[in-house]
View (cartoon, rainbow, N blue to C red):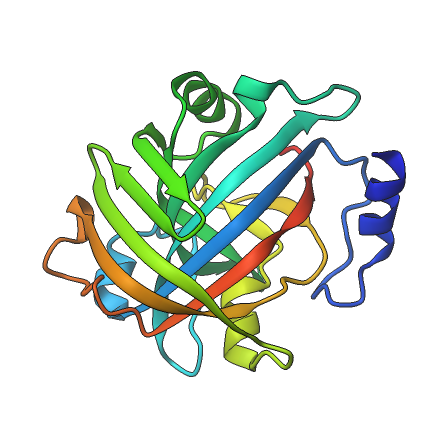
Length: 236
């Protein structure tokens, strides 16, 4: 593991800013990741994001993304992963923000498969985790929760050997924000660049109560798949 961490830390040329000058605190893996991206009106998005955060846009357009993946091997520095606590399925709904010219993501909701990791994540991170029923196979996701209902059937398509600026804008994000203060502090993360593929959607049914009849979740503007990344993060 130590050699793996050193390998991640020395691969930094793709980052938009330097890694923090402190010791990392968390290790985790985001595996088998599906990204579904949707354009959203600025006025609607502004009402969903704290005023302390600036909305980030790409050529004047604003976006939210459904991101489904397997969270694996999560543990703190000098500890080790515990099977039940460290491995679970997660689906989040996120958007793109900035603070002090540092672009990151803001989570509108996070659904997690296991109850105790969900409670711990809420306590330790302050992020909007909620326990939901989530099932996954090699080509499908199913989620049933109080805030959302999701069914995704997909096939992995062609490898994106030359991602566009828009592909990178949506995926290469190296901090997240809670937005709970007037001057939000970013939670810094680091990983190697995403290895991106296209997706062929076979079936799709997504409903978020928060955005019902506002976003057409059945027709994403763009989709990505990635085998995943190994991630280190710093504590707030």
